[in-house]
Length: 178
Ligand code: ZN
Image (cartoon, rainbow, N blue to C red; front, side, top):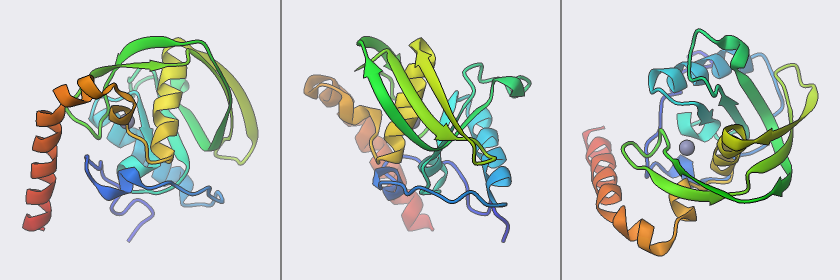
C-alpha cells in the first residue's frame, strides 16, 4: 500500500461523489496524492479534479486550465478551500470527468474570491473570473457532494435521463463483476 493506492477516477453514481468531504491536515502523503490527481486529470483530458473524484473524500482540488501536462507552471492546488465571495452570472457548457459524455449549460457567478492552503500549508487568496471561476466552483461543489447535473433545470435534466441511466447501469454491472 502506498499513499496513492486506490486513487482512481470515480464515475457517477459512485457514492463517494455524493458525500461531503472533510478538511484535512496536510502531511507527507499529500504530494504523491496530488501528483496522482494531476495524472488522472491529464489522462482523461480534464482541466480540474477534486479529491472525491479519485475516491479521496478530502477538501482538495487541483486545476490546470491549459489541461497540458507540459505546463506544470499552470497547476493550481487548493487545500481546505473556502469561497468567500461570488458575483455576477454567466452561462456556459460544462462537463465532468465523473460524468463521461454528459455536457450541459450551467449558470454560475462569473467572479469568485477563494482562500485555500497550498501544499506547504500556507494560506493564499485568489480572485478568479471567467473559465477559472467556473472551474473553481465546479470543483468546489464536488467537495460538498454536488455534481453539476443537480444545478440544471428540470427540463435539461430530463433530457439527460437516458445517459444517466446508462451510467447507473454500467456502475451496477461493474460492481457485480467486482
Ligand atoms: Zn466534475
